[in-house]
Length: 160
Image (cartoon, rainbow, N blue to C red):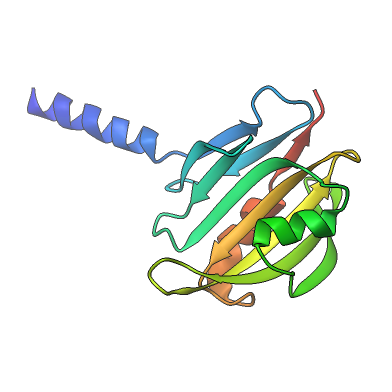
């Protein structure tokens, strides 16, 4: 009996740690398909008027916030609002196959730890854009950010 109980608990624990594909936002078209790696956690959170998908690495040293946001008439203005500062850099990139811009910023968490921010803004029309913010204490070239880069690279656009 104990063996069956242990096997059931292990199966449940393995299920909870399994990789997951999340459609975000769930009822919006187009949407993003985000692959959350095994062991990472995700949750949906309401922030002001928009839904956010929050993703954390197992050790919480890499955090993502993905949202659908109004462009405020300018992706640069949107970036400044999200980063709560003028971005320190801007470059062209892609997110889910969409033309996008990556911005850099810095902040400090409540414990006084300096954090690096990378924000990707991918307009889907003149009024809205997908945003993906990477928050970590690691520097941009740190090899430990490879899973974060893969998560971003694996995001797909769902047009239906």
